[in-house]
Image 1 (cartoon, rainbow, N blue to C red):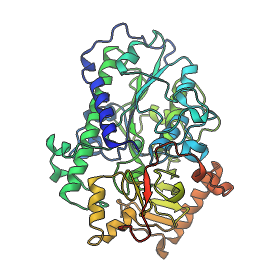
Image 2 (image 1 turned 135 degrees about the horizontal axis):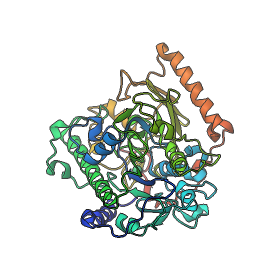
Image 3 (image 1 turned 45 degrees about the vertical axis):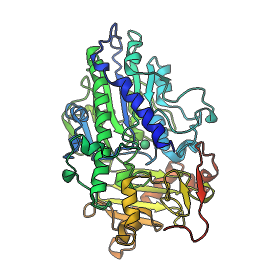
Length: 494
Ligand SMILES: [Ca+2]
């Protein structure tokens, strides 16, 4: 866990680097690739959930850049990350592989073993000018897995520097990893900027209090900053005359840093904003309801560059879908996604994780918790940087739910309590995913079907949880700082 203040300083530095870039003309910019391969600009928010962008109808937040990409390109309504946690989600984006195929790349503060090729490396070998700025593959230890360099390519101080150094005649591929809207926040910044907290749509899982509304505004405030920064980069590409043949992707690595969101397999943890624009080949103005996983991006980037994805890839290229003129359901077999989680923060005795997998279809969410005796949000006897329940970032909203434990035990239990081995939610009638129907006889058939489908997928993709029953994750090294203490028996406040 990065200390909040240090993170703020780092974020302020990034903001300072980018502000003002739009006024700088790019001299001698690279001309388009002679073979027609597009540039690729990948913009990744840090902890932003669906539907928190203007294009999805969210009334308070203003994201004109995301909305433009959606309007002139394709807006996805059912996009999911591969894991609701920074490092594994980024490992999956970079490799196009499910987290259970990535060894130590599948958990927070792990390492990404060199045996798993990443798309920036493959594009670099194919002649692309590759770089990144901000948060790349992180947090974790790059070299422990046998890599000599960052999986996201060469680090640049700014996008201006990167694009200025792009060789003529070569396409480029850039990863912009924002640290927004990751915590910490400047408390009250959202409301102070003019947002009306009364207009905020408070998800069902949070108590509707002034503190929670303000906390959500602070989160929106940071998403808006990310959006502006992407806009400044688009201005530079426009000035270079390359916007038409640049594939622009805007999405997020995992859900909002609030209870039962980030580090959880519910929609607030896994369902992502996603918009893609590429005027040269992608008809715009479309909304697509197919279920896509962010693992689909790496094979997409490889395909537009004329490369085949490596054999181990589980994602499926989106190119055919992008090149149609269709809206709604375009490829009917994209009717489900599978995601999972292992260890997130170091917040259980002996560093144990909370292993779980899920399948999300249009109507249902089914979750399998492999160790239901463990605490899903962290052990209540373990004090971490994030307080108790260390898988959930310290926050005003977390404090409100903890303080209301006795007056609102239902929300407390949903956020922090133990969970049964199986969970089933009817997303049509319970979009907040609060009523577990796994024990409901009326849903037994659905439960069996989804359970079977999940098992089949996990076995087919080689998940050790289902194939050998081995679970190496808990024994793997955690490359973060472990600041924690265990309270004596009986001293836990919860
Ligand atoms: Ca994140």
